[in-house]
Image (cartoon, rainbow, N blue to C red):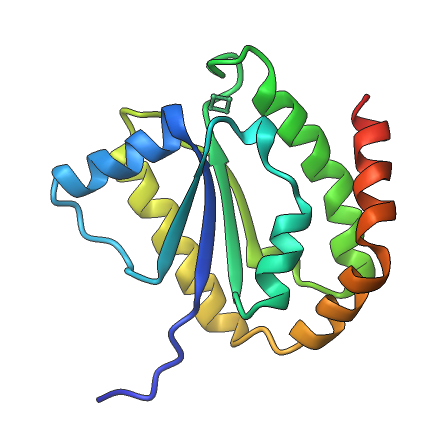
Length: 159
Ligand code: FES
């Protein structure tokens, strides 16, 4: 048995591209790190970025958000909304002191099984370097105090 740190990663992915791409990774028998648990959404535009903070507050060491490439979203512009939310969210990460390398934002299509493996492996390698996320209590306290205000602000700015 090894004592090497095994990062816990949650991946928030869209059903139409990345989820299908991840499935292709498996059916193509491409090996990749098993540290990731996938949560499927209809579209990245439906991902509430507060869930990312909740993931950290509940013990994740890193997070992946991934969906269809620009102009390939099945709901036309959901991924552009997600990208705008991501830009706003980055500032909050700085404020909370969460290293940006703990979150990977990517586009993976249904045909890119190999790319999904790459995204996961790179994310896990980065997290191994960073070590466990230990500020989960601070993030949980911040969420408890501010979740509603921030969610509203992000929706307003997302217009
Ligand atoms: Fe995949 Fe919108 S359906 S990002």
